[in-house]
Image (cartoon, rainbow, N blue to C red):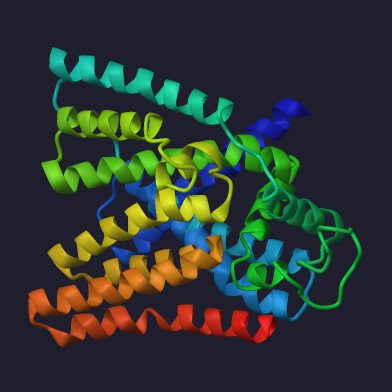
Length: 343
């Protein structure tokens, strides 16, 4: 049974996002690379999860409705991508000894990074809400209608639970746990951080290509530098490096470690090419940030507002600014819902 659960976890957390990303990129006509497929597959899944979950939470619907809708969406993306049969490959020029050496060093550092993250993870009072909510959703099929402090059922959202209505990251943890047969605790503390780290490495790799060009040697060195900075970047418990290494299952840590760098990456694509498909990727990423954390709702809006203003000035095109600012509308709606519930 344990082997089956691990196999299902690998399927749901690594294989399915990659296949979903292939369908997503195929539909939008985006040039494919392996890290791009995995990142955009996760983003497409998280964005849809945010879109359907918030109204269903407000309607106090069953968790099973989300399972069905999200599975249909993921299945559609995967099926479309598989039907097209267009997958990127890793074929390239023959590697020099310098490239082979730095690839080996990068591989060793990745193993060290994974090990340090798993052994150094930090659980605290935050888990009594984030992880407990996910476990309760699987157990009761109710969405944030159990007080994590007492275990009693509630009829409305009180205290910290009001944040989870518009940033229901625990629902995704519960969904992964339900599909794989693993407890959401195992998903959160063991499996999901590894999957998210995989996406973070992909973002770093794509950023290196933007900064340094598509060269294996330069990209590996860039990854090595980023990993070393994170391994020795624990100068505060509140900085992005510490959150990435210590608590990557929490939504706000995913915002810091993955969401913000991915936002910079996609905005760079827009600045260079100004393609419609890149705007779609950006709005999906913004919705994914909203799913992760209430902090993601605010940070996503601030980044979109700033990038839109700067790009509009540099490109001398007010339409670019307008497009960015229109993408802030969902953030405003989610913040208004949170404010109304809180008050």
